[in-house]
Image 1 (spheres, helix red, strand yellow):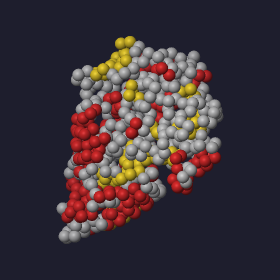
Image 2: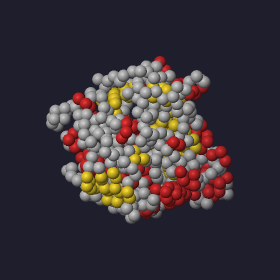
Image 3: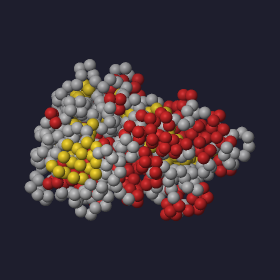
Image 4: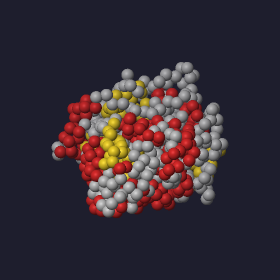
Length: 630
């Protein structure tokens, strides 16, 4: 995918993947209660839940869909990629790829350029396709990623990585860098060593697709209501599909984006086709209703007509009730979202053109007070690095601005400010006129205003007196994305992983590919060139302030290392460089909250997808699934 094509994808994802938890996980990977109940897991029954809106970015077509909760439904229930996950918490290995459709780990050539996978022979598509999954079905999934009209929203992980993958093809045809010598063997030829390739092979877009059905859907999103299962479950009504011709096919009855989705067992699934510790498959089904009233959703959970929440944050009154009532506390689960909230600072906007001012801000931030304002430990913990430790175990080495209790260090902040050309006396505070009245962009929705007030007080300690401007979420992001607006400093931004390796977190936000003039996610201009500046109408600023630091080459070089080495490389050559230049100040690693009802006998969290794990949750309600999509 070209840089400019990538930007069209990024613009769509900037709010969805960050705000709606598309890349979404308690930094320990644990919840506030045990994962099981006294009775332990039970088999059968239906998990009944609801959400205000699915929020899908590509109508649930796995080729382009970029929402984390959708990834959870794919990987836990519906689809089996060559690699997968155990669908558990990070502390239980839930962020580490394991063979799924593949019978074992691949054979990798000594130069790291060839990966050979052998498929399990006993995996079948659900009815009505009802045949064995073959290597050609996996290759066909990559043909779809390669087709421009399908707008694969994270095709950058394959384009230019696998030979023949560009994401710009006009017709479906075999990918030159993928060979299928027989039905159970598939070989990938890479353009360069890619240390996190197995993580990429666990993403839903790579799961096998039966051509006899999907060939009928070559526009973005159209396949979403016809997704043929290769996993232990299927969407209700899949078995009623008339696949005799494209014109005969009608959407599955069990999925209506405006009403809900019902998922039932796939009768063609063989338990012997997967490792026993990969999925529990306790449930007979999952029902997800659309209910636009979030208060009603949690009232139904409390009343027992729903078994638990799904992807909606509980209202503060409900959260408080569950957090303080001993009889309810075990039903409130706080799990690591693998998401970082951070402050951005623009090197083309005075006074932040001075690195010492930016570093002073990083030193002065009272992250403990910010976390308290954010909602306390249930909602997240102070962040000391760009990547959460659940994404990069080496992240603790990137804590460049340590302070006792994460309370900030005013003395070190003042010492930095003294080195700034904006400090005109010996106080250590910013005294220049540029230190007052600049825009501090925040969000107007809770809890941002409380966090912003903590930041305002911290900035005042070093002489910075901005004008706080708080806006709705969409306006906040569109303002940041418009680079020529030169937003000086902001608490609007956050970012979640695509997969739990550094490239899956860092690439979009640090590589120059994220520098769209009005679609940026690289808000601090890392890697901007004179040509980029000219395109975005920022040539005068570029001439005045010079080229911002670039980590493009470091990202590419680090990711060619083995998976055991690239984690530390990203900390030293990417994260520490960006933080050391004061462009980004991470302040919180966020959590996701889930509330379960009395019927739930086993709770588990899926660290990869950032939602409840339907692979392991169990209920004792004895209910058969009903269609909530009608």
